[in-house]
Length: 282
Image (cartoon, rainbow, N blue to C red):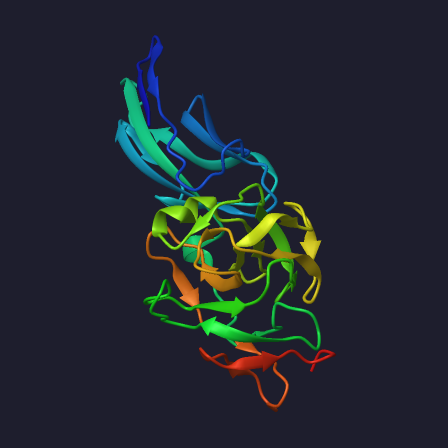
């Protein structure tokens, strides 16, 4: 929260708290401002390789938000000093003050329009076949969630189900347990897609990523190795596609269509079934 008091003679910075719920530690997500003849110009830095959404809560005195967008703002990837809005002075003869809080969330949030007809590739090697150990709405950890767990040994090669930009890589963890608090020890790769959705490849082994944040990957590219880290009760690959949103405790996850051997059309995968990936793209 920024709390600022200004008048025609001087301004005083009282306190600064920038609340960034989804910005990674050490990431290039920040807000700055400067005083102009019209009021206060708010700018954002996003040096991450994918877009970020910013949500503001303004408390203004003798100022108004000049843009049509009053609360949610989208900042492109690798942007510095990107104009968010101008807080324009209403009465130039009077002093003004303002305070605001903001959150930064990876992705486009309210602007995402998912391609529900996109056909994904199974996230393992061509010709490989694996069982869906836990499917959509699974009883162990997928209650109310559209996520898939593929049973596979530690060290199995993982491939991109869809192309995009690598938005996050975590691979330094070694621990796991079958309790929710162990989610803090999860290794994963997040790939940001062109329609604004994001794919999560989770429970990777220690040092199991073969890509880095900012890499561009194509569908079918080798990206890492499966493992047994975080909240899990055995080796497997957790795969899900999310729509970025502000309610991070209840993310929207999509059921995804895949090409599989033995089916002439893409299918929704089912728990308990084994699926064979085609040797070549269908």
